[in-house]
Image 1 (cartoon, one colour):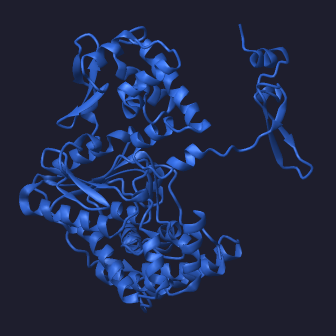
Image 2: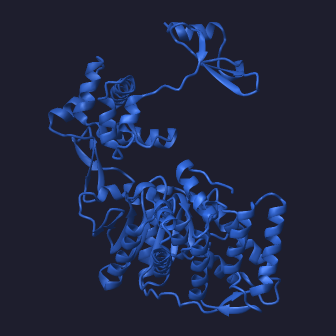
Image 3: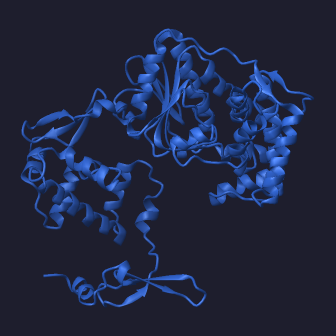
Length: 519
């Protein structure tokens, strides 16, 4: 028999969006804005939808480690915690009963929920986070039957459905009553699986793992994977260690949702507000030297990206020997949004790529504009493939990995292949910049952006500094320059913007509101 509220919906033919009513009802207010009402399952009347205040969420929000956060949530006395407690109890009991009914292997259910329903983790993985015994305990609280095989695991002294041995993920097999390798996992590198070993290098912002076959992997661990001094030091030390002959090369990658949101804006903003420009100069120079080290080290350095690849993360990726990009990598030099220009070699690199695209006898200005536009508009590629079109990635060395979870594995393969007879690139002193003629063209393009209301007055000022770097400065004629020359004027432009109050306003607004200010 259907619950009363469900029968009420069926009797009234309130089937959802097509019938205009369902669990929710959307009405228009007098001012034309939307007002959502929710069905009260007890009174069966529509009431204004009010966002609930859940102490359980507030109390656990800052717990970063997932298993501890879940354990705290389901033990919370407030209604949010009790809701999750009952939810997980039913999820665990139901999932366990489906083995061996629909599959002989518990990992198949987890795989299905992750791939089919976009869950971050499957039911048995969540159960492991909560704890095997704890999951059984809460299921019994709600008089839910636990599958015999789960009880057998507990009685046999096992404490989890999965475990990791020597970096290999294993699952509990019901038939053999033992742990077996999860099939197909050899094509994935999950850095968490190396937690049983002490990292080769570690600091507060990153860890460097030995992922086998003579390859190191630098894993970012800072908040939002923001790039600070610790990450820079970790990458540099990993490259030094590989160059000592102990390792083939270095992968820069992690298993987080986002590769990185870019440089640590809080640190930059605080130093800039204190007007410590000597310190800022050292910070920017240090990051420029880091990206150049990624390019000119004696070992291959390959990036493995996914999610946000913003600002400094994009610059690191651009300077690596190669990259393996998850298809859903959102790549961009977004510094203009916070009142800056790409200062870690990104502006220089776009000038280099423009120069490499010039052909003898060809009209060079359209090519220059094509490389200039993604920087001054802070364009973000909506996929790794689009990053090619924005000239942020190079199809000759950067490859897209459709299954994003394989990106570190593919990056490791690239390091191994490149390490055979590896020769580091030759320093560039042949970068063609167009000087004043290029500046005139880019200034005209900037003016058109301004007339079209695509740029504010301050956007124009920033764009002109980007143009100055990409054209090699105030040169009377086109000529060839070195990378270091471009890095120096890039750093000069970056620091001059940090001395402007409008840039500080943009940085502060971004930190407070998580969106750009167009002042």
